[in-house]
Image (cartoon, rainbow, N blue to C red; front, top):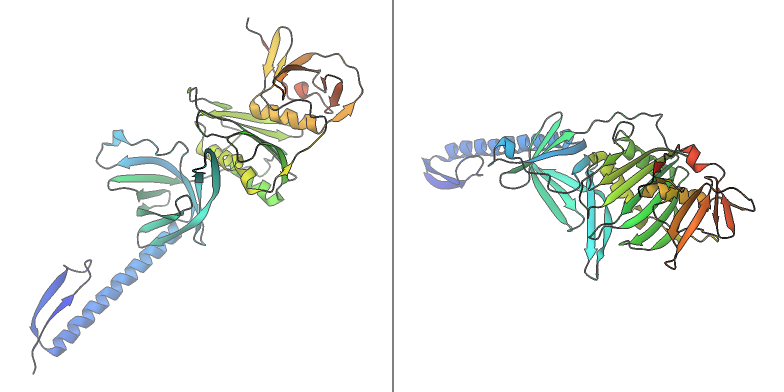
Length: 396
């Protein structure tokens, strides 16, 4: 019988790089080869089952908790890597939402940010989670360390791990709003300064001032389904129980204000300076501030626009009442849809503002009627009484 001597190369995860086999018979070699092939098939099968389980377990919504460096003690956890917290929704069809979103700047104008959206593709190969980065047009790869019922742990760098928890929401099906308004203040950097109002019927009114891809007043329309999704994203933030004000105490930070309207009444207004509010609220308003880049805008032209867009301050001789930027935009939208009337009234308050020519003007009002020069607009109700606005004594 002929004696054979051979070297068989095996996968690294089965044995060492190679194994030298001593002289064996052809029959013995055949049996050894069959065993090796079976072992490889078993490993591949196990790997496939593992990937399949990870694909199933990752489905759902995840919120970033913390980033940990294994080289440090538990008390030295790294801070969140981004000013806006990370979060993902993984869907069964190999698409996912990156709550932070994807952005792009162009060399010819670094002051403007283009929002590429938050929906992208993902895939799981073995224990590797690959998410397609729309900003860099490449796959971002993380290693899945573990997925439990409530926790997702991924390795993002050599010794750095990110931990996520499965998001759980208590959404009241009876909670709904007629209008949602988001306003941004701008900052020392490229933050956009804008106002956008979205109504339940799909009407959108947008005003871009600085660092926006378009400037001026525009209107548009979205579907009922789009509005429902926007509203649900905000409701995930548990609006009834979160604070009205979040402050980072940094002068150059951006301030976002959000106002929710129902039956022509302000239900809640939230001010967030420096992205200090809960992640769910940040995610909800982040996509809205760039909504104008993904809808068809038409220039808004209405004769008789009697005041420019800016934070509004109601004043009497001794008292004043500040509106947030989003509340101010709400009042402006009410004035824009009001009727021009010929009516005399006793002004109780004044609103000082700078006109388009940079000159200071005064708008007189009793809360229901608003008069600039010879033009008076009736919004149909008393804005101050309807929203129970509080006045404070002016400081000298």
